[in-house]
Length: 225
Ligand code: C5P
Image (cartoon, rainbow, N blue to C red; front, side, top):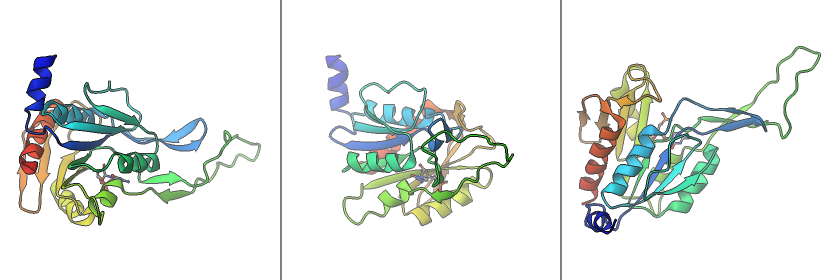
């Protein structure tokens, strides 16, 4: 273990703090029901592990997943988008932040504090939605204490590069990792990603999510060097 520690201490990210979000969020409808998505947390957790393996101190803010906690990483578990933003704020300052979570876009404003019941009318309840905070955009546009490198993800069904470039500009982040989830299904084992920056677009071969994580961690280390 001492050799491992010594190696990590000499890693390219030694002395750096990185914040990573991962997994889906759950937005309650009532105490027993929620709205979720198909994110598994595989990619985000693999990124947290890969960054830690390069010597970084890593805080992983994770929605509900079945992935094990990556070794050597501090994990904050949350359910909703609003809780995720709070946990990210609490984890800052950081040298870099990687937002790999599939955050819900809306939460239910009129969520019940009791279980919704069917009644004799046959009518379904009307759910009312409000946008959740955009965690990536919030952090990327912080006036003070913005991490030096802010990385976002764009899971698209078609035109991944185009949508990714739009997202880079709109959200104000430094890098977007775009992938087409109509080709490699969301929650799966492999990913074909495009690394989008102001400068250029780099398309990586299809590889498993662990390999994407390692390559991305190396890329982040280079950017922070
Ligand atoms: O706009 P869209 O949800 O496709 O953007 C994806 C990127 O934005 C991901 O990096 C995701 O983690 C981040 N995001 C966020 N908070 C939201 C929505 C998206 O951090 N409410």
